Image (cartoon, rainbow, N blue to C red; front, side):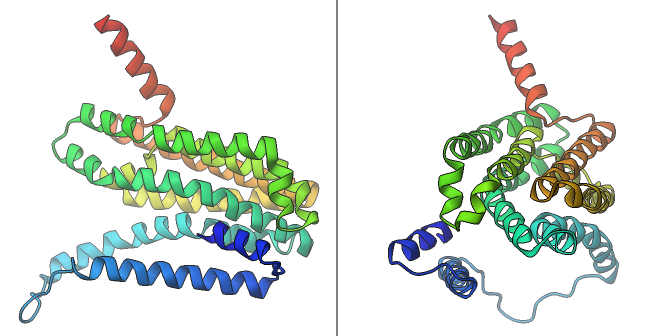
Length: 280
């Protein structure tokens, strides 16, 4: 919807100033929120009488377990905003704007990865409760195709027409094709590694998950301090790549050690090919 709105503004001859784009973003978000409310309102159950009071012991457990979940959620959803804040004192304002645009475009593609991973969480939780690792592998394998297809398609499109797409935001953005490609490859890495982050939560490793998110944030900050001043926008993109690979790799290692599970595409596709060869 946002990209469609931007294209409509361009077609109407409206200048893409910060205020115009901010207003468009506000309208899009408000429209989405209103649509979700109207669609979900009829499905929200109405409880008669006073709501039951949860036992204090359970409340303490829920609050204790909620903290690491909130940390992971903040890291996941506000990654781009935190990174922009990190590079702001290290880069010129024009370069910071380019980094922000590339991050937002990459995360629009990454939304497909996020959706695919979140959709399979209930099935993963059910399979884990039954202690059936084979079902977990099947569920993860089914969640690979869509995000892989979307991220690979986005990389191909930007590789072929990146300058044209970026020129829609201004001529100064056309030089950001390579940084944008690097950030899209980061989203491809998320798709390749699979839903290891939500699966850590499913197996009860919330604290380890939160610790890895904080560690990845530290790696991102240190990488920005080293690479952004040296290579500018390209360095900022490389810093994101370093932090992303560290985060995903560490999550996969911890997941394998705690549960013996692997969610990466290489492993799962290898098992699928081996199984088909065995049947043949």
